[in-house]
Length: 246
Ligand SMILES: [Zn+2]
Image (tube, rainbow, N blue to C red):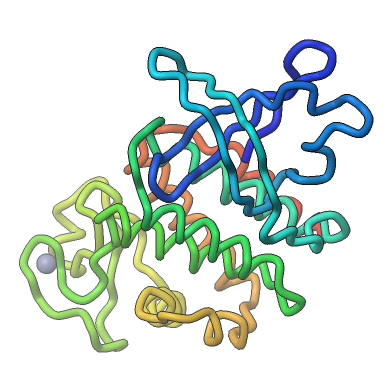
């Protein structure tokens, strides 16, 4: 959800919906005292929305909305709030207007639930990024060399990451590829593989990263997302900067 003022008393709210993708509605009179919309919507809420579609316009008319999830943690925990802002921004960038993307709606709805839990950790964002890449069909390939298909599952083999190739390269192929990154530390690669396979957040919440692990993970996913979404993601830099200070 994204909020903007419209006139003196109305608001434009952008929603992510399960069946109609991203859409914007006008909440007429929403800023007037005693208006029926008052307290019924806010950033990071999940709501039931009733609206009148305008067939030839991009701004529809909201009739009613009712909150289902409030996620009040984001009002008091600024580190979690910055991560939630980044997650919604990422969803907005990844989803075109009016394109039904139920899986992406479920990803954001679930992701905000995960960030709103009491045992929040900023590492959850990296796990949620991996889940998003999976939904978009862009999951990095982490088991074999992208060029020669040599298995790289064993921790004894050094592997390099390539944004352009969408996964790992063995040392021999990386040597011939000027765009390949320096070798990935074995423990960082193991965490990445583990989180990519993890269907729930429990292993992510249990993992305590030291800065030598969190920094390369954060950097690797950031570069990979920017490369494949082909756009800057300023909210990501803010979210991780707030997490480092928090
Ligand atoms: Zn190779």
